[in-house]
Image 1 (cartoon, rainbow, N blue to C red):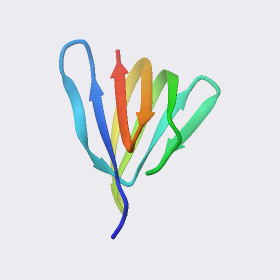
Image 2 (image 1 turned 60 degrees about the vertical axis):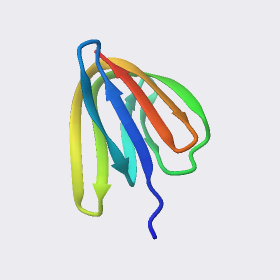
Image 3 (image 1 turned 90 degrees about the vertical axis):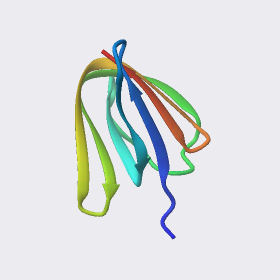
Amino acid sequence: MVEKIYIHVVSPKETVYEGELLYAVFPGYSGEFAVYPAHAPIISALTAGVIKCVIAEGTEKTLPINGGFAEVNNNRITVCVE
């Protein structure tokens, strides 16, 4: 069984995306970073760019953002975006 991580992306107006992923790649201020299942807890500011959500092998969802913050804790990613 493939381990997954849950993501919840919200903007001030709505939930942008939520669901289970294999991993996600974020546009951080120091460069891109990836979050996989069992990732250490972090909070990071995000720059304008694209969040890449890898849902299954070969399946991706991209979410363009203008910046925001991501929190990772207990196999859950919470993202607040502009």
